[in-house]
Amino acid sequence: MPEITSIKERLVFNSRGDKAIEIDVTSDNKFTGRACAPSGASVGMYEAQSFVNNDPATTLSNFRNLNKKFIGLDSSNLKGLHDTIKEIDSSDNYSNIGGSIAYALTIASIDSASKSLGVPFYKVLNPKIDSVVLPYPLGNVLGGGAHAGPGTPDLQEFLICPIVSKNIEDAISLNSKIHKEVKKSIEKIDNKFTYGKGDEGGWAPNIVNDKAIELVESAIIQCGYDPKSEIRMGIDFASSSLWNQKKGLYEYVREGTAKTTDEQLEYAGKLIRDYHLLYAEDPLHEEDFENMAILTKENPKCLVTGDDLLVTNKKRVNIATSNRACSGAILKVNQAGTLYDAMEFANECNANDIKMITSHRSGESVDNHISHIAIATKSVMIKTGVVGGERISKLNELLRISEYGLIEGMAKLSNV
Image 1 (cartoon, helix red, strand yellow):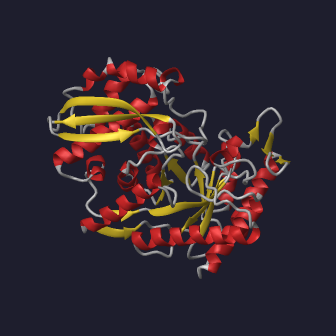
Image 2: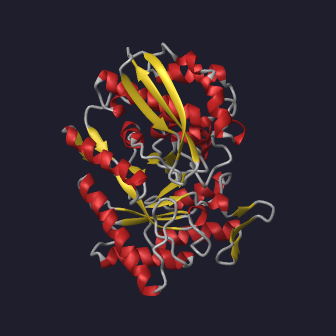
Image 3: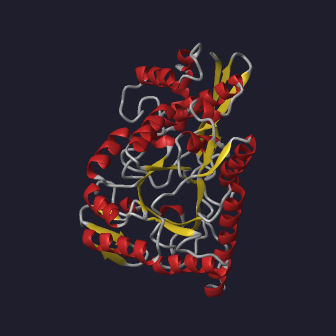
């Protein structure tokens, strides 16, 4: 049993230059694990609260008076770590200790345990894994919404997934190739394009939504691939950020248009059909389980995926399951709070045949733990972005994992 012998916490800065909490956990006076809590720009209302009173400094100061409670615990025992955190903070959203603490402490502990035990991080999380199935990288090549500036599309992410690839190196290479081709395509229609990017490295051009997806499709074809069967497209609608509850409308402010719920449902369905989308994330707002279910039923070859809908929350997945509201689920550990919460969420999704997509956040660190979490949860995809050191770190870790010699292959994307 690897025993926690010391804990060190600090304030650092994430990829957006915002303050973040990083924690070091040392087991057996020798093996140190480290984790930095990320943050999102598009945040669901049911997510764990990152900081006490929205103040990183207060959150850190409070934890310094509490960290002795974790000394002596088994750093490989997620349930024990989780239970100790909940003894301190019994709230539903970690508002008393801070979700950033819950995230960084539990992930750093598993990181420390993996070094102490001499096994990969994913193996500590899921000891039953004997051979590794690698997730496909889902790459953001063009962005808008909360992740980019004014003038960019209202829709948040235009994504690609190279399902033609038989190994992770080829998949990463193809995503990079399409990302570069998208830039060339933008240059052809905007000679003043400044090569601006959103938070996650997707190009941020001054174009409307429909033109954006046409441009991505064209880039795939220009590179010699079929967008219907080889390099498939996806969209993160981030519809909760478009939804005006008082008016009952989805407001596309940058386009100067608005859609009723029926029109939004029709619009999302049309994009899925017209562009053979592999993936559609949050096409309806976070409370609309009913219409998400309609879209899921009508599009069995597309992963209709819940992010704000589910917020990595087991209770929300139970609602989605009873409504058959999605076929895919985003896993973001910091939405849930502790890594134990996230693993419970993943187990519930897998038990109900909801495909897992492990995801980064827009405000990231160079940590690569989510690559291991994707494997441990049997995720079929991993959202990491395509470029940028904090994005590439996750992809490069998948390459390292592929060297272990225990690779079964890439994930099975059945029915798509």
